[in-house]
Amino acid sequence: MIYGVLVGVVLRYGIHVPSDVNNVTLSCQVQSSPATLLVNVSGKFYEYTLKGEISAQELNNVQDNEMLRKVTFDPEVFFNILLPPIIFYAGYSLKRRHFFRNLGSILAYAFLGTAISCLVIGSVVYGCVALMKVTGQLGGDFYFTDCLLFGAIVSATDPVTVLAIFHELQVDVELYALLFGESVLNDAVAIVLSSSIVAYQPAGDNSHTFDVTAMFKSIGIFLGIFSGSFAMGAATGVVTALVTKFTKLREFPLLETGLFFLMSWSTFLLAEACGFTGVVAVLFCGITQAHYTYNNLSTESQHRTKQLFELLNFLAENFIFSYMGLALFTFQNHVFNPTFVVGAFLAIFLGRAANIYPLSFLLNLGRRNKIGTNLQHMMMFAGLRGAMAFALAIRDTATYARQMMFSTTLLIVFFTVWVFGGGTTAMLSCLNIRVGVDADQENVGVPESERRSTKAESAWLFRMWYNFDHNYLKPLLTHSGPPLTTTLPGCCGPVARCLTSPQAYENQEQLKDDDSDLILNDGDISLTYGDSAVNADSVASSGASRRFVGNSSEDALDRELAFGDHELVIRGTRLVLPMDDSEPPSNVLDSARHGPA
Image (tube, rainbow, N blue to C red; front, side, top):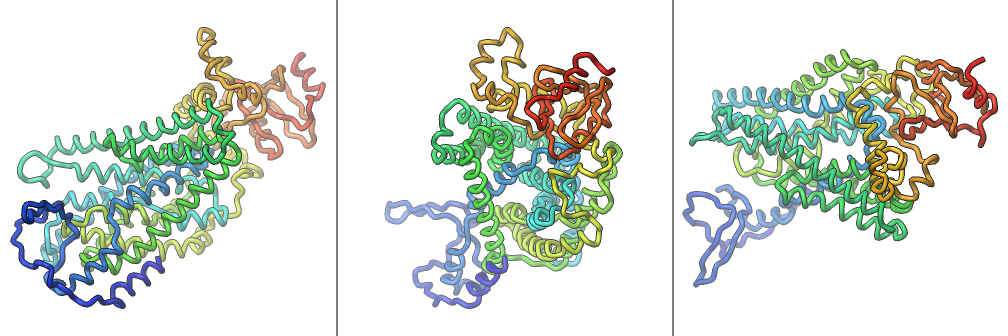
């Protein structure tokens, strides 16, 4: 960003091209400014596209304006080229275990919280605009729909700086999961929400009056676009998983990586062609690819795809932040109004507070692992604005209101990234948030009441999804999970044998499910070793041999899960606990066969 600022200053004030306006027609009476203009010159038609408005004071600086235009990108470049790899990587690098553990809270913050933030920001900004109109500071039309659009734009959080610091310091995994999950889905919601607000069109001549029919139509557009984009992204991920599973692409890692990249990118194009939002489709494609397709890739392709999209994400984000600094000086239609800027900053803080604190209070009523006050303060502090807000704001700067919104959004991004991003470490220390937490060993040494909070939000809905995914989708789309021949009804035997790969039989006892710790039934759970079943009331002890007794005990099971050198693997309806020895101790089998003495 600092690099972009320096380049912008040099281009704006350090370079001057001599004026040459001999071949420029300065007087052409046109009532409007069409986006495309056809000019008939001696029977030949020429097409011209609208570059932008030139103010009356800059008519003699046409060449300078042309120079500035050369360093100005088409706003669609951000949406079509730069944003897709950023959003895809967010979904592809998602830590599913912690994401799904807090799924309910993340969905609440991302959907309900973003809507609340949009309404609060829009209302506050509308009051600010009314004040500007009274004091005569408003130089053009600024409607309530514009205020809501501004609310949707700046509701898109992008705490990339904070998350980078969180990752480096290994901050509390619950805080990292909540903030990262919210920012991923929040971007998708903000994109679709802004499109729905733009699509708001009441009947009649006045397009800015309130109309119930138009409002419900916009809500329908939001739901339709979001669900369609989700379906398109998931479907492309499923197709890629099937292709990588039932072909021998893994024998050609370079071709495999290339196909993976092209299939992921095609998600964006397909969604846009079908009238959906490509960026949202790419997000869910990334999540699906990480959950299914990644397991089918060769080891070399797994490393390559991770590194490839990490690099693309890094380059795209750095380019966007550099261009922000450039645009601060090269954008020719900035509208900076101190009253609007102050009102916008006040609005984003109130909107973020209305998102975090009330929802956290309501969520804590149903959570076993409460979201602490210090975590809420940190989430409030970490609501930075970044690449997504900038891309949404620069997409349309044709009117006075949109130009003022874009200029103010730039200032908001600069302030939040520099001030809040730079103060993250100090805020973590001030709020006494634990750091140095190993995400894989987080349960060791933690009170049992907190350890069992892994099930806090894995309620009936996610339990149903997990069981369906593990027993049917994972075996269908990957080489892991129980063979379909053991989960599908007997009448589906031929189809199950056709869809189950040989690797599924070979790896049945070796492959593990990363999400297995999410679904633990509160009732009786039986553990199996080989063909012998034992109940889950085990007492933790050091050494390779462990004693199993007859009655089920959730506390004992939780203690068993706390050991880092053993892992729990779900195979269909059974739980397999690998032991250190190749054969189970004889006393274990005896107690399993004859029951407790």
